[in-house]
Length: 110
Image 1 (cartoon, rainbow, N blue to C red):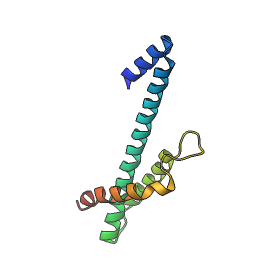
Image 2: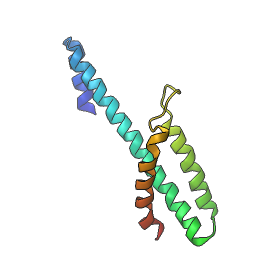
Image 3: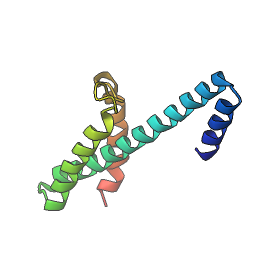
Image 4: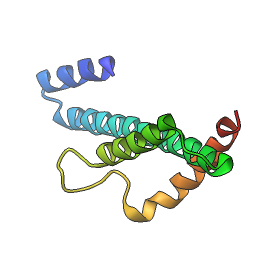
């Protein structure tokens, strides 16, 4: 990202505004991807503890805390800075949930 910021500054100084806007778009895309990766990570963590709870028919304090904090973090991360929209829309959750569940099965068995 450092190189992108240098390129952005250079583009603005040199008056190449179309290039600057393209770099801004690229940086926004990188930011969104980082947020989505974080959401996916919390989804996997959430599913690991839900699976353990289901299989072992018990809920430890640690698992309960992890489940609760994962849900809060997912909500917080998904809410865009403008406070009016979300990174993942309601109709886009299903594939993410399926991938996270699949990724959580092996770690949950440990």
